[in-house]
Amino acid sequence: MKVFKFGGASVRHADAVRNICHIIEQYPDETLVVVVSAMGKTTNALERLLALAHRGEALDPEWHALVEYHAQIVEDLFGEPREDLLDPWWKSLKERCAQAPSLPFNQAYDAIVSHGELISTHIIAAYLERREVSVAWSDAREYVHTDGVFRDGTVDWEETERNWKSLASDTSRRIIMTQGFIGSSPEGHPTTLGREGSDFSAAIIAACLDAESVTIWKDVPGILNADPKRFNETVQFDSLSYQEAAEMSYYGASVIHPKTIKPLATHRIPLYVRSFEDMSLPGTVIGDVEDISLPATYIVKDNQALIRFGLKEFTFVNEENLSRIFQVVDKLRIRIRMMQNSAISFSICIDNREDQVRSLLRELQSQFFISVHQSASLLTIKNYQEEDILRMKEGKEVLLEQKTERNFQMVYR
Ligand code: ASP
Ligand code: MG
Image 1 (spheres, rainbow, N blue to C red):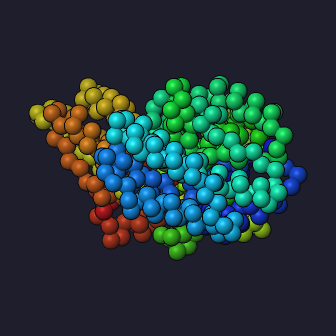
Image 2 (cartoon, rainbow, N blue to C red; image 1 turned 90 degrees about the vertical axis):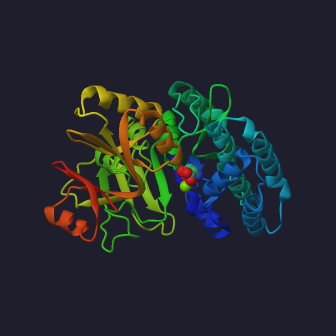
Image 3 (tube, helix red, strand yellow; image 1 turned 60 degrees about the vertical axis):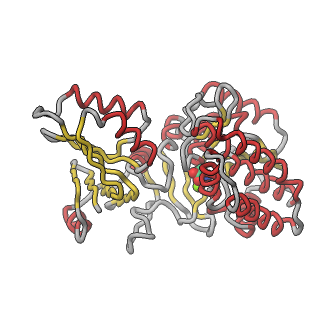
């Protein structure tokens, strides 16, 4: 059994959907679990819809655009509107939007935003069936169980494994199609695994079923040492160790979700990253390999916040005030991407999430002087040479930098 994962870009319009169906059809003798994200930029659109719904404001024109976008894809695929296909989902989404003002924001978020994946997989499964591919649509909320932390659910592995094993042994269909990114809480409320969490979903399912491999089909030919949209010269890795890939994603390489590697490494399941645009390309395999002479790898994260905590009295940064900061950071589930300590201040670089930055300030303002740079970027160079650093610093205002034997990091504007 193999697990395939298709992200939003691979299903962003009808031709893209035809293309991934074509890929699936190239594996007629395999049992597949196919994990799919929301179409195109639907998750962002749903986030905007949620913001309106939660404030109890009018949903149009967001609503209309969302419905139109999917209706267009359906009509293009089926040659007719097929309202029967999506109307139940629009009805359910409407209900969730109506409930939103009375729910905590994050709970409303998961209830609404999860519809992107539910709708995309529903369309694609129906279309595969029409192409006479034997497919079972499965609702990930029934099979991926998490705790009750909305927007950042932690997987209940035992329960989830039991669910997937029984689903896989029950179905007579060759393909199970399910949603990435979503699950449900012990109370049965929809939860999500964090933005871009569909890769992780694929890894979860693969681990539960001890799959032969996972393939993430992407709009790049494989894993590159830098984002080709930012860097002119890039090198593709033929293979990477689990360790190296995990570190890359830890530092923010967007090619794979950070939580994806661990379950695969634990089960020794290889992960292929391949191009959905050109199936003839070999891609990159992440697995039990030795990394030999890796080139410098550049990872840029935009939209970072650099937060500096200064002490209010003439004392030094000590374990006690550091632990106070960490407690709050942990409570707010903030991921620190880089940190640095001096005698009189402590700095952290985190994703610039409005809500988190605001809460952090609220909790710690009375004890520290806090300054915030909200439009910073973070560059990490793995396996660097000195000249790589000099070149990257050119023309940038460096706010903070740090070096270890293998990694260089700087926060800049
Ligand atoms: N649709 C979700 C997102 O855009 C999950 C994913 O694509 O992996 O964040
Ligand atoms: Mg996506």
